[in-house]
Length: 72
Figure 1: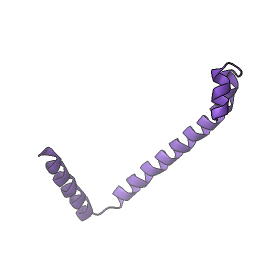
Figure 2 (figure 1 turned 135 degrees about the vertical axis):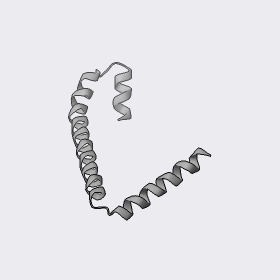
Figure 3 (figure 1 turned 90 degrees about the vertical axis):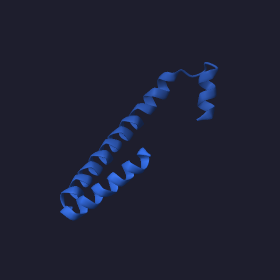
Figure 4 (figure 1 turned 180 degrees about the vertical axis):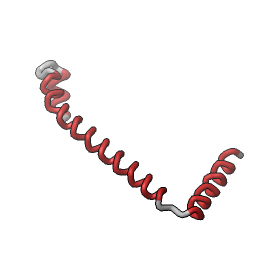
């Protein structure tokens, strides 16, 4: 990679081939990131949906304590 950067810096290689090679990788990375984010969100919603009332109350109490500690 460093060699390719040096070649580009001195003008031997243009940036066109670099972007032509990088675009498919970036698209794949973006699609995988979107997939992970979507599955994580669905997992959180399912987890909250199955939570009992007492668990929700405990989470809210913990959140309230956290906010009060940060406020002071």
